Image: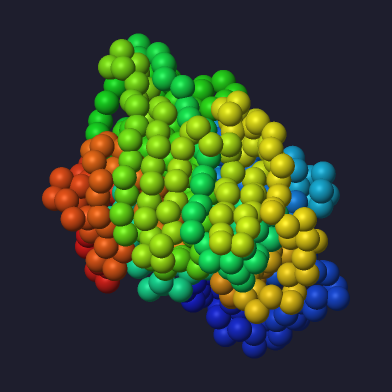
Length: 475
């Protein structure tokens, strides 16, 4: 099936070879009535990059169940042990579900996977510091892309990613699965259509990660290409609490290190801030100011992402968005005529989420009980509704039909920007003004934090330049 964002030669070859095929007695096209809806030529060929916790708990299962649409045909991970486990899991799944033997290719170097012209699309479930480069590499290789959130490690990277996706016209989805969840769609559409009057405040509660971690230097496992795993970030010694568990798929240490991410402000913030942006209709822009405070772990803690925090973001439309660990996990919209609350109802992204992220709250509530049963089809503004409230299915159908999924690159970048500008505000501890058009602060020190140095040959900008792609805005 031709599904990727640049033309491949596979189908063209079959068409050109049609005369020869017919001459030797083989039909050029096998009718679908013979092979059915799951004919190999109709299935989207998907590859999985990153085979850890999120890949095993969310992304691979999300595609494995869509046997009429896609096949996972390759996996890649810098830890070859994890790639091997993923290969076995996928092969065993298809042996049970479709009674077929599928030979899944396992790679340690993802570039081998991207070079395979038979692969139409990739899922990226790696640590945060690899997201931007992998999206750039995949898009420039002509693949459609599903990537876990957050989109990028820096605001500058995010701008590059959005520009690449726009230029290559790839079908894109980010793992902001709340957009494919009924109560979040309901809340967002009601707010967007003025059900609570003019919006004046949004209050977002997020969890925090604990300090701690074992800093003891350890030998690098024989199966692990640790230097490549570090990617664009500085080279430092190996210890398991810096990376991922060698046994099982528990919550990894890299989530709690600033070298690889920003902590819960991007971890859970990417989800709830994305919903706030969607509900306001500000997906192509963002706030104009941020005032943030945070407590950071003592220097004795190996893990060093933020602890307790309070952030206030101001929008040009007059809305004030408050984000705090003191608030219940979810999103509260307050308007002149009422309020709407939405959350996961205690559902966790993964079983290893912090306890605060799993505390049960009502999934949907509002000042008017009628909100819960309101007929959304009567609204003037209709938000995207994913088929069967399934985020991966939404992406696969978009790939098949060459249409936009529930998320796009620019919206993902803008939501991630809010997380990262909040992080910058927390680090500096002073009010900052932000211009969403130029994507710059009014503060020279803050602007220095829009990008990080890249350790060559790794990094999204290095990848773009290597591929000859120069059509991007530099922040």
